[in-house]
Image 1 (cartoon, one colour):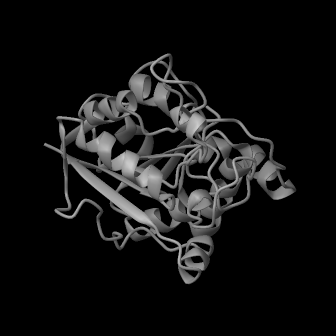
Image 2 (cartoon, rainbow, N blue to C red):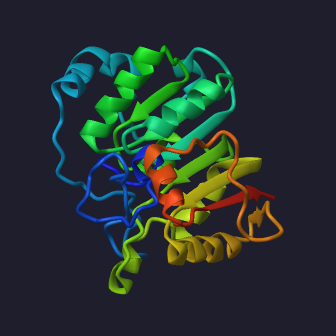
Image 3 (tube, rainbow, N blue to C red):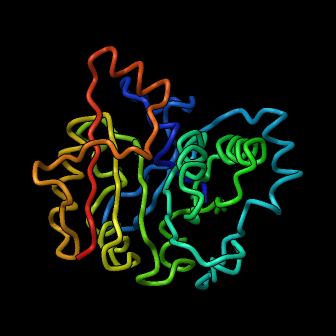
Length: 255
């Protein structure tokens, strides 16, 4: 799946440019209007460096799990039984690698379709010797539907999905009711969905959509949650904060 939504890429709090594929924006956003078809990405042009191309040649067998249309035994793939967290749209993988390093007791399933980001994350994992991440380069919605068993995930991370600023493009946003219902079905009781965005109108929409799902409850009494310690501040987010831009974390748990 070529995908768009998250992580280090999108951890920018400067205004997002839908044509920008720099490290501050994730390339995984819904490109199709709901409810016709949930999709989690928009493919964008981007240059793959020689290092990233080498990662595909030398590291794919180690880190990439090919898409398949049946539930996967992730414990077998990771070689251990551990809590499983899905990340949708990790961009260039900065946050993914950081979180996996600080949570070595968790198995992370990372979905992204943008080749430069996938190559970059493989290089980060190899350089930092991080063994608890596997990558699925495929549409996260189909991964959820086919490869993730119901009630199996401990958590879901969606960091800085493309905000699609223009009102007429809001329907392209990833966080919509059909996807949230699908996510909730894949969570264990007590499992969480953690979203973060630097675009306040999108934060308000995310809060509304998650609040409307009966199987989820807000973990914060004030609506927005404090930034969890495990989510790092990237250079883009830090720059935005210094400029006075806001960042909103939203964390819901399955009841």
